[in-house]
Length: 449
Image 1 (cartoon, rainbow, N blue to C red):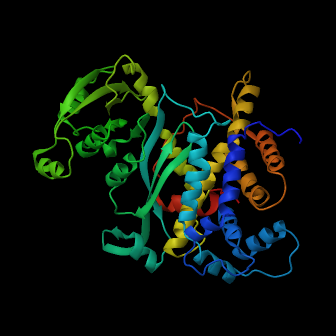
Image 2 (cartoon, rainbow, N blue to C red):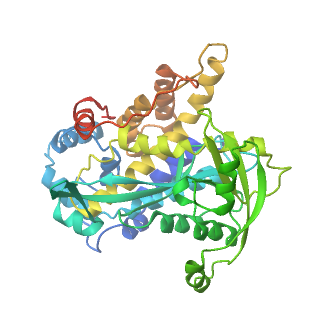
Image 3 (cartoon, rainbow, N blue to C red):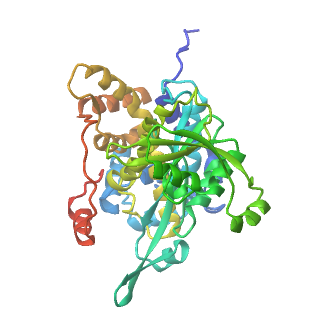
C-alpha cells in the first residue's frame, strides 16, 4: 500500500469539504426541502445547484446569471429560464444555510483543530450583540410578515414600506457570525439579545451598546453566568448618574442594582434575580466625552480598569459587519419577493461572509508579515475577495477540480490585490439628507458583482 497523507486539513479545506458533503447528502436535502416531492425529479436546477446559485447572489439579471452559471458547469444546450429558477427556489428552505453555517463554519472554527487560530481577549471570545433594520421590497405580503413603517410629515401619514430586523451574534475579533435572527422589525432587540444569551459559552464576553443597558438584560446575563460589557447612558441607573456627575476617568466601583418597583413583580415571575452586583468602569474617549461601562467582570486584578477602553472599542466590529452585509454584499438588493426568498438571501449572505473570513485568514497573515516594514500594514481587499470567491464557488463546490488547486488560486488572488490599513484615519460621521442618501444608494455605492 502507498503511504497515506496524514497531514490534517486546514480550516479552509475542512469548511469546504463539509459544505460539499452536506449539499450532496440526501438526508440534508430531505431536511431542508419544502415538501416531500421537491428535488425528486431530474432537473438542471438540482438541490446542489440551487444552493450554489443562491450563494452567488449577483446584481446581474437572473437570465444572465443562469447563462453564466451553467456555462461554468460545462457544455449544455437546454436554456434554463428565470421561471424555472423561481420554481426551484420555492422547493428550498432557508434552514439549509443555517445548518451549513453551524456545521461547515462555526464547528470547524471553534471545535476542530486547524489553521484558523481563534483570536481572543485575555482568553475570552469577544462577541457583540446588536441589531440592524433592513428595508424590504414594497410588497403587501412582506409588510404583513415583517411589519410596516409609516412615513409621516407635517400633513400626516403619506406612505409606508415593509421593514425587518436583523440580529447577528458576531465574533468581532474573527468576524464570524455565530447566530442570526431575521424577524419582524417591531420585535424587541432586548428580547433578541436574551435569545442570543442561550448560545453564549462560559468564556464569551458580550459587548453591548447603550440601548441594551437595562436591569432585565443585565440580570439575565448574571443569572446565566455569562459575561458582558455594556455602555450605560445617562439616567440609566443612579450610580451611573453619579459617575457622570463626577466626570472622572479610570474609576472602578462595584454596586448592587435592583429592578424598578414597577418591574419587580413581573421580573420575579420570570425568574429574574431581584438583586445583582455589577462593576461600573469609567473611560475617557478621544473626544473628551466620559463613558460609563457596566460589567460583571468583577476581578480587578485579571481585568484592570485601564483595559476596558480598548476592549469596548472592539464593539465597533459589529457595526462594520452590518456595513459589509448591506454595502459590499448588497443585502437589501433581494433576489425574490416572498418572505422565504428574503430569508434565503439573508442566511446565504451570512454564510458566504463567514466562508470568506475563513478563506482570507492565511492571506491576511502573509500580507501582514510581508508589510511589516512598510508605513502602513496591508490586508486583503474584501471587495476583491468576495468577487473572487463568488466566481470560484462552482469550482469549489460543484466541479471535479481538486479543492487544493482552487483554494491556492483564490489565495493568490487575495494576495495580489491588497489594501493598506490606516488605523489613525478618522472619517467624521455626518447625517445626510434622505435625498442625498438616495442618490448615493442608487448611483454611487458599489456592490460585489
